[in-house]
Image (cartoon, rainbow over all chains, first blue to last red; front, side, top):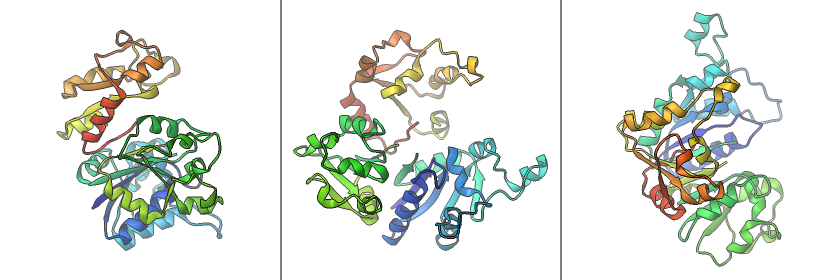
Amino acid sequence: MKISIQINASPYQYQAADSAWHFIQAAIASGHEVYRVFFYHDGIYNAVRDSRPPGDERDIVKRWSALHLEHGVDLVVCVSSAQRRGLLEESVGRKVGGYEHALADGFRIAGLGLLMEAIIDADRHICFGA
Amino acid sequence: MLYIVNKSHASSQGLHDCLQRASAGDAVLLIEHAVYSALNVKQTPLLTMSHSELKIFALSPDMQARGVQQAACLEFIQFVDYQGFVELVENNAVLRSYF
Amino acid sequence: MALMAAAFDQRVIMLFEGDGVYALLNKQRPEVLGLKNYSPLLKALSVYDINDVFVEQESMIERELHKGQFVIDVNEISRVELKRQMEAADQLFSF
């Protein structure tokens, strides 16, 4: 099955990011394709490069980057949600004199069209929220 | 249809709204704090669901994390791990999350 | 999102239930709080060929609302019928 995931909540404060990540691990282990995770609304905070959790806690942002690296999962951050929250793409950051390196490895910023595409193309689309 | 509920009946209307709409053949999966609603206590809206044809599942890693014991839950609750969560998704063409 | 789905050539059915029915009320003035007014977007639904707009009867009764209070024309259907609509869909997207 082709699965797409949507995450609407920020990491650590809500369990959504954890539930989604554990679900994805199990789905991949079962042989399913998790082809996109779309981060929407406060979900964009899962993509903040400078996240520094304490050493004895799970590193949610790094975990996502590793998921992309190991399994090629497309991690997409919604551009309108991101811009509103000051998470800018490198070229945009440079242009407006903002911070250029906000986005963690393995993520890309794109429009809602990619969420729509994921919903249309996937066999199953699962939302995790606050 | 598979309903995925993440909050308990005490903190949100989600489970209540879901139970009003779910019917025979549907499945409800309790994840995150919603696993508290699987406990056999007077206040849980699931108390009246024992004879319904609705299948109610609770995610066991979320139960273990919270110290919610299987033995303390309503006897018709079925327990699944994340693998089971994936199977529920496979077996239900329509999914609806309540959060 | 609904308008985008229509732009992607998808058949879109909009379902309003629970407190979601309040989104249809006319005379909304969000500009009082500096917020965007979505009523014009609701009126645009038919322009995008989204004509299947359903509202749950039970939700309306619970809130003592009637169709005349809404900013667009809607079809009232029962909870059971609303669910049938959901089951017939390929995907559900919630707001």
